[in-house]
Image (cartoon, rainbow, N blue to C red; front, side, top):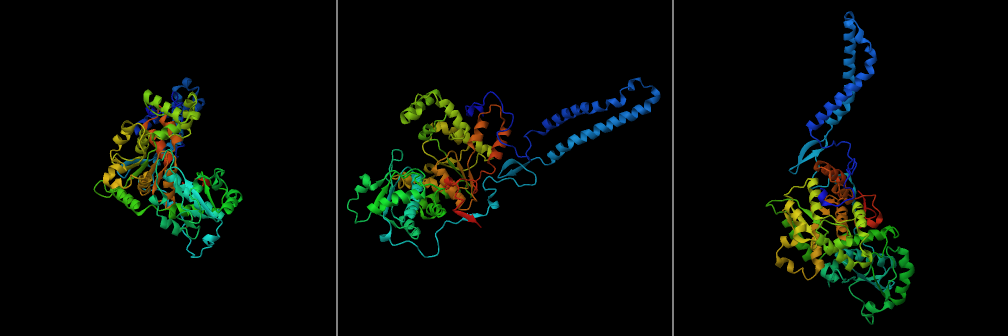
Length: 552
């Protein structure tokens, strides 16, 4: 295990496990080892137990044979005392042994299970029945709209949704919310090309526009294009007089009312850019957050052809063995850009590390500086769990959780940094690992290749439909998947590895496999994707508990 990770912990073994042990779980040792330990411990206790009773017969070596009966009686008392103390000391051990985990089998895997409890399932969320939350952000069914006519709204707003598909999705949800706050009409958002996601996709190329407008008709007015009466449409994209640029990140609702609304009333049409994370969460009314969920989970639907192709891919994943089988979706974030931006240290040759250092210096010169401070920074980030998991690390975590080599795994990923060599441990341990390119024919995917976001949408939907979803790093894709699975019923298992705890185990050169398995199982037994009341509001996309869900 030590070869997987550089760590500051090398050189000294931790005195305890990285995570608190469940009181029901015994250390993973064999019966022979335990019995041998008990025998040595018993001998030591005998010596200790005799010493306090020595005063009874300190003069016995001078006793005559005529007093042999008294001597025998004293030895009998000593013997009874030893038996009594031994029983007192042994009672806790006997109790623990009776309640110790036993070997059980589930889904073909041998596990250590607490007595009196069923073994946990690899493919079901074991705690889903304990929650009583349900979705409650769907469209209002009153049939009465309190919206004024379009010509009586305060004006029109146009936003530029930047980034990849999922960042754009969040921006669209925020745009609807901002339009509601200001009682403005929303022009269909522009999906803006940037330097990373070089794509010319339009809203109507990826989302069902008719459904989007119809579903939100009682919440906001949405139009497909800039009104014909506006004299110069190009001015809306180029003129600073038509652009609001001073919106701070996570701005409160009141900021839009005080600073943006007056300009919209004056100019009638305004563009808002940039618009990444330009609306807060704790500082907006609850109904605005509920509206964001309504947009995300109900109004934004992919085009029918994207939905249909995703259904085909999910069906093929469930029938790869010739009969119905569950499948896992793995979101692997280990592209070159992600590795570089993370500024973490990874396993690799000197040549690979030198090339990555040059890449970072070119792309992020202000952060790189001379590179001398990056080593300590990388160690600290790994301890805090802020580094992407490598494919080899994913392998040992999944095996420790009990997933067998036969597991069917769908991988949603870009081009993995390091190519086939980096992916070799994952593919060797889980040979039934496929991507959409291996699951579908070239002809089937050709219709989606003209838009990168269409391919990303396929990955999104196949992951959303999976029996188990595993994320390896943060990001909007994983947050939106886990959030949607929570919102739609939290029956499906979603695993979010605790990378901070795992980094300690990876960095321990003395840890055994049995101890590592116990660490993984105990750490992740409740990290299965249930709605969590402890989440802050800014994680609305990952945990849409309040105000988007309610008690049954």
